[in-house]
Image 1 (cartoon, rainbow, N blue to C red):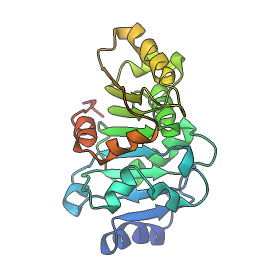
Image 2: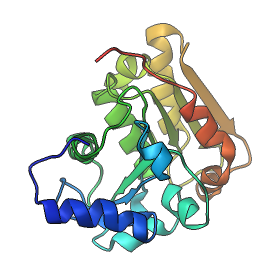
Image 3: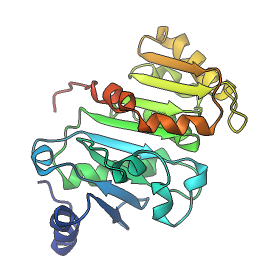
Length: 232
């Protein structure tokens, strides 16, 4: 296990204490955001697991990390979903900064032996923007991404075009208009025709309806099929 320069006592608490109790543990002051950390079964953890980053929407913002459990990947884990990956779910109180999100990923990579070819990111609403902003800034780090009812920077279109990306948006979304996703989809397609892109327009869905996607196997199966296959 690769160990960063923080105290051994913290590592013992964060790792061995983890195994004796729940799979989830809150982590503070080890990255630019506080975050939930989920470790998979020991057999998976010993085999260089992938990493999944979940970015929440605006309604879960704040300084109470428990808010992040209200929906999404962490909520699914608490309900019993088994995910064969290290999962991190940071919390922001003022929008997502891709550099700060990377600091959470760096913590994981410096603390555990992971498959760096299999780093995934997903998010909804503000987290959908955060997903595309992170993948757009660091496409070399991301094996695949899913962005729900968000948007992105059209200047990142050609970077986003290089990775498998699934964008979904409801046509009845009045919180974040579907045009926000359509703009970034157009930018991606202008670069390579969208050969790595799936865009799902949900004609009868509103903003909150897309939360149910985190409850489907399809989301996780789609993400985890991809690997960058880059030699380190």
